[in-house]
Picture (cartoon, rainbow, N blue to C red):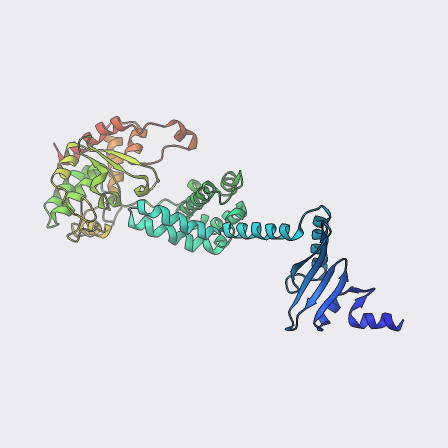
Length: 413
């Protein structure tokens, strides 16, 4: 009875260790738990688990890890696992080393969503010529995605994670939210292609079903636009102004091509094919992320031919400031304000983007052009996913005819 009480005081029972013993024992040496498992306490106070096991008739000693990593129950379970391996005729130490190597490899291959996004941006940003787009891509993820799922293993990203990032801004910043959604998807698809993850099969179907349609909740704010009937006079007024020749040329080119201001301001020479009279804007510079071909009218070609390419131009821009860099949108906004160009919105000056609306109104009022052709000229995505799947043609020849008519209306010849 006294001996049993002594064992209890020492923290042991029936010759086996107890959690209390593991905590209290401090004498250096080996302290048996049974079945080959020992608690080893070093002279310096280090505490670790040790297993003696027989492999093919030979006694082997293997470490099972620190007491700080594994408690008594966990150490017993690990000992049982490796005894079974030894009983099967395998070397438990070799098996442990394989297991640790596999875990290390898995850990090395593990990437968070943020790490994948940063790598994706680094690989793709060179093709993003639009400075605002290049800045907005990482900024939107920093603001809305990384705080919610930036540190999440890319393999574990779920519908819940995506919705956690999108739901707070889906109603209040709908346009931004749709862009963020698209960027999350691009990163995940890129990571899947690299073998970093396997996204949930129905991830985007479920995300779409979980959120209201953006088109139903988004408040559309139209840019103030000049009446289409005023466009020829506006162009003439700009050309009679004190603006620089390059600003005047770029202004007219924006209107004649019905392009966005940024697409023209950042257009390099290598996007133009003078022989085919075509301007091809790469997907990375387009708002919808799709390559867009623009047929060039005689008037648009005349502007290009009046701006010969300068050899050694670092940026290669067609319409550039004396420094060689692109004009800002404010250069055109200031011009419209200075000339007091009116819009159809009371009290508002016309905007450069609004001339795209002027073009659409002209096409509807003055031509019999099909709606799809006009939308294609504006580089708008036509219809839903089903319509897009069948709309393979960009209606280029019809658009060339339309842009010729528009140029004759604007220039008057």
